[in-house]
Length: 153
Image (cartoon, rainbow, N blue to C red):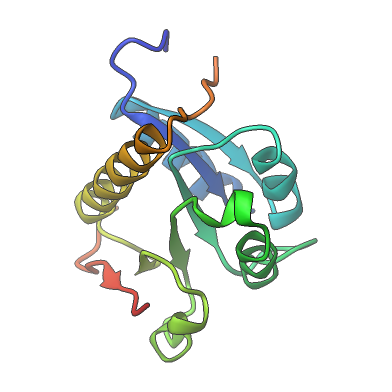
């Protein structure tokens, strides 16, 4: 993708190859630039060099899981402003999600249309926030009935 018509940049943090590859392909087909990290530690290293419009975060990963990643991200003011949507197979997450302070969460498997709508909404808001601050995001050359769950702040 050459930058013209790019809708935003998304960092996918997912250790499952099939899910990560499917998300990458889906988002690129929708016009997003996608970077993929297989754990929280790789994601933090990436975030120290680039600012995506949105992070799609799995919680259960080796090396550094999503909970640890989110703690580190929120503890760094330069990284904390990047919005996060959680994708998790933990269907009991609704009892614990407020601890993560994320924009939304989707139980796996998730409805693709609902996920794309949330990505579009939060990438747009992030881009507007960066523009207002005089910054830009750094450039990077089976559907289920589950709907997104809004996260409580």
